Length: 274
Ligand code: IPD
Ligand code: CA
Ligand code: CA
Ligand code: CA
Image (cartoon, rainbow, N blue to C red):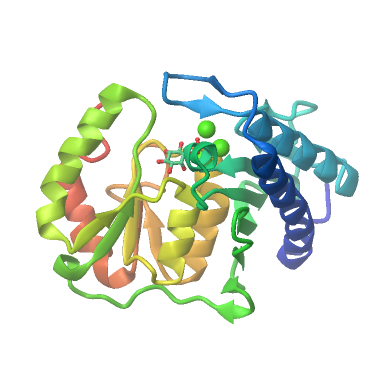
């Protein structure tokens, strides 16, 4: 049995690691994007920086807390013995660069996302925009913050007035389905925003810069830190019909908008398709 560390303690570690990682991403961008290859489809890119940043995070976490496991986008599971059943075990979840396409094009909307799970529950998370240095943090039960200010989500009550962020996966069949859903959603809301980094979308919802966010196809590393930050800012973060937020669908909406947005997305079969 491990003694579960306090969320604040894990957040301190996450902050140090994420800041160093974000510096690496930013410096590598200034030096010029390199090592660009594709993964699942022609548009699913990965760069040398995605890999270098994740390796740096893995090394830093191994040094700070050698007993913990790590799940990352580029290197998967850190391996080692399965400690998921050990009470108090910590697993880190990292997206080294969320918003790789923005990174590729030099759009200042890409981030390091790092979260700590204890016993399978995310208890601490940081999302740091590597281009701007903006940073969002949360601990479970302890609130969400940006630059020392506690975050509160939008209080909008009218879905017709809601600015909603979303994103698309890399698979073209899935995108066709997502675009169909979107085409029917747009007339029912104020407008849509597609910024290109799910973790940052969740942080923008946390501070009320968009009213809500939804997306199908997110991976654990897209959602872990930003999902906690959004929830701690008062958003309801869930899937369809009482399911937890996950690959099928993530809806992050203020309590005042969750039900209407949920029902609309359910009616449009937002979690369906490929
Ligand atoms: C992607 C971004 C994008 C979202 C995709 C993600 P990546 O992550 O968050 O906004 O729409 O679903 O896969 O590949 O840039 O880390
Ligand atoms: Ca990726
Ligand atoms: Ca991502
Ligand atoms: Ca990524």
